[in-house]
Amino acid sequence: MDIAHFVFGLFGNAFGLFLFLAPIITFKRIIVNKSTEKFSGVPYTMTLLNCLLSAWYGLPFVSPDNMLVTIINGAGAVIEIIYVFTFILFAPKKEKLKISGLFAIVMTIFSAVVFISLFALHGNSRKVFCGFAAAIFSIIMYGSPLSIMRLVIRTKSVEFMPFFLSLFVFLCGTSWFVFGLLGRDPFIAVPNGVGSALGTLQLILYFIYRKNKGNAKTKTTQEESMEMGTAKPSKNAMGDEEELKGDTS
Image (cartoon, rainbow, N blue to C red):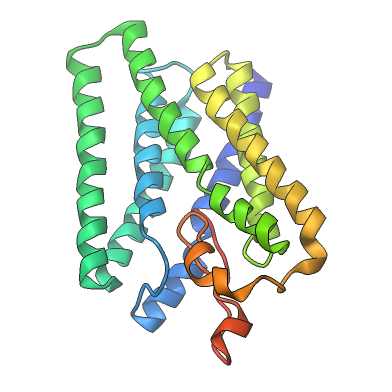
């Protein structure tokens, strides 16, 4: 592993850790209120699957020179499991069953990938199989903010798209994109290139509509302002209720 490859891997680890820890504010609110309110638990389970598959892909016997990928995604998997279990604990019965079922599906998919890659595949075929699986769910994870971007365009407000989270989506995606290019690994470069592009679009939208922050149309906020598992009702819609702070994972 050359120096530039290693350095961009370190950048990716740092920015990735920030993104994984960002929902702490959301879960602090959930724990204090003992309710998941309008927050969605689906993005956390999907991010967990992405972390598990990416961590597995980065192991030396699957793909060489990608241990930094395993380190950050292994840490991310632990963090996301905590989020998922916390969400299940405070979710209403229907949502509890939904997220528990989705968690079971996530673990089944991961277990199947591990089993097939260990006992049915070897060498490059193992790398390709695990790489495709990791890349698909990485793209799904990065695609999560599309709904919030649609809301920003429609309401012409960035009330529900925090600047620093958009910035770190861009920085994280870009770092791993360059890491993948330097390592000639399309399974890392392609999905993170998508992440970098989406992060760029978020930043462009932010600077276009930054002066309109807090002026979103209230009728759409409660059900549509979900970005990677978060929701934030506006003050106008909730009267004297406290404004939720948007997060991502």
